[in-house]
Length: 311
Image (cartoon, rainbow, N blue to C red):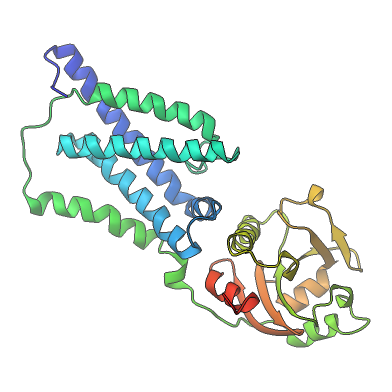
């Protein structure tokens, strides 16, 4: 697009361009602040693996930051305009797919700042595309920075994102955390508190969660989407939550934010088995705990190989 000749239009286009750049930067920062939920949102479409979702989430944030910086600086105008338009069109097509499959939850476009569903987000993107088309008429700066000026400006957002929030699979590998093996063994024995769950038969993914805990909620989402994406036996996933009562009782979905049904166990037993950790996940084989993980090191491949070794 050729730059406008009218002085008022040139100034207006430049102002809109800078405002769009600020919007992209704010959107990227909002996603980075709430990166855990953004990762789970991408993974929830059951298209990418969990580890790939970690990287894709960060690449989206980095691209938004770079485009935002490019729009605000008004440098490399042609490249920045092309990238910004492709990004908005790509986001819109993705949101269209979300609407097509019936998703009505927040699209995480603005992280936790704004809760916006895919339909309204498409309208927002349509407005941004129109504003970008107008802003493309702004004149570029005549200054052409050398590579040693612009290259650090490109590298800085990449390094910053991965330093502030490195992917979980880079920092947390498989581990066998401390838990009370004696207390767990007692609970699953005949006449024990968890006897009716038949945890001494077959393999299970036993998750100790607490309603109201955001990380427990996201651990539930990770486990649920791993189960769906890999077509695992949903009966192998068992959730336990603490309660003041002294007996085992089912907890209906109407009274919790978890996707799967839960069982309530006495708070004291819950604390003795887990040493108070939450969320914590046990991988049990014939009643023996063969591995544990927490929210950060839930490993999709490990769970799949554990529940379905043939895959």
